[in-house]
Image 1 (spheres, rainbow, N blue to C red):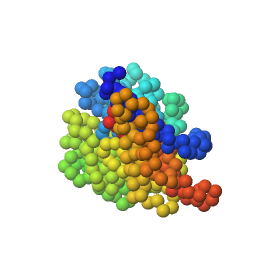
Image 2: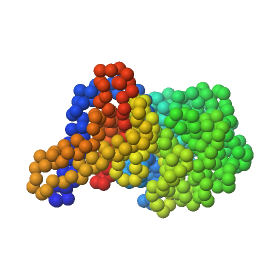
Image 3: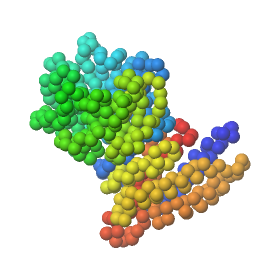
Image 4: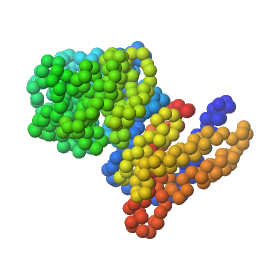
Length: 445
């Protein structure tokens, strides 16, 4: 084994022992928590990776994923077909996407796991009829099915359709005159949002009941393309794109169309907004035009705009992976936006505000990084690494019990809860707890 390989292996062993020591303090509690989590529905989600479509390697279009700072890119699909419009399942373990020979013929909907394996065709039109297409998949919030746009008999234009997760029970949700685009359920599945043309060079955003009734025009600026609605995780707001100011920009509004706010304001082409699962950030595409763009992220109020990459050509259609969790937490945002550290921090319990929660997450992260990058001298045994972890863990989060679990792509989901007064029911129900995603992208995959 080379010296570099020994260093990498030592770092990983050191981190593993560090997290193991954190878990060992509350081993019984961890086992009980895992059992309860398996039986319970998720109460929320942290921010995982971002999927997107890219033409960067000269192919027609493929699905890629990356960390939310643009690091650790991974190509999930390859080949001569055009893969686009990826959408994460609510459990963050699968991606639905569109595949076809080009952007307008024989388009079908496929799914795969989060690493690009187990690719499976779910639905398509008659291959003998090139204009029959199924596209723009969107998982239902309960994970039991998908909405999608389809041009299928008996209608010549596209409508909102639905199916189960294996492509069965395919049926039309509603037929509305004109073309329907970008359908998606609200988080509570009480409404479906979509876009439809209402006149020449004019698109509007509508919502309807799940059975296709109660059609409501939510937003429309005459002569503008108001399109690509995306629900916030709490269902109270909708992000969308519009060229009402002369070029395409990103906006948000209340779910009923009120309180419209412009988030981007530039001469670029900004499109395709998608909320982060914790509701604190929005990813989107920005570039010179709709054929040249890069993936950007910003805070939900439009501040802290960050370009994740500067790649010639087109990167587009981002979607944000949810990492589900149990328990009711307040979203605090990232402790860091770039590099190794704590992302998507959440807080719970009395007397733990977001500033303190981020401080705790950063403290744990610094200790984990110190453990991960501690390399014993050449020839030193494992005891040397363990001694270093003891010192790091002792000064990390005093009074807290921390548990870690795999979040995929070498990331960890970390939950640190204050020991508190374990025998008092009020203390148990209001115990301070911090939850976050920890990333250390130095070594790659």
